[in-house]
Figure 1 (cartoon, rainbow, N blue to C red):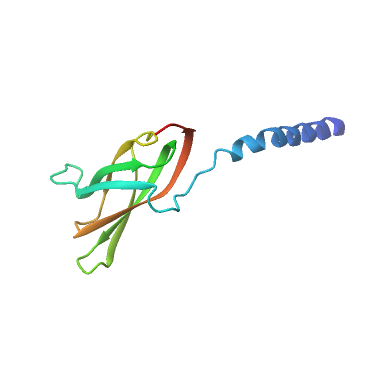
Figure 2 (tube, rainbow, N blue to C red):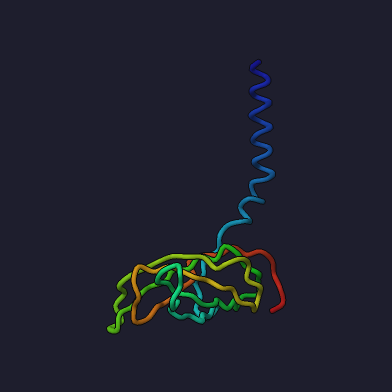
Length: 127
């Protein structure tokens, strides 16, 4: 019985050792450099979903990306952040392509500042 437990432990460690590096390759990337993404943003007028910000993210990376998480800051006329919301770009965004997003906000603002919080790379593509 003790031999089975030891063999099970050794087998488990062997599996983790073999497949651990594959799992690490799927980590989430965080956008750090300015200019990798460009946004077309506008306040969603007359949306049945309530107040929100909608637009397109333009992907300047050489990779198809997915799971793109956005942060939208609501800014008053003086430039002070008065609110914040998070949302997602719908689907995958090809290298050099664009993806649509709608992010609900608590109330309308004078301006909005959108940034990419994180994303996952899928594959390298020619833009």
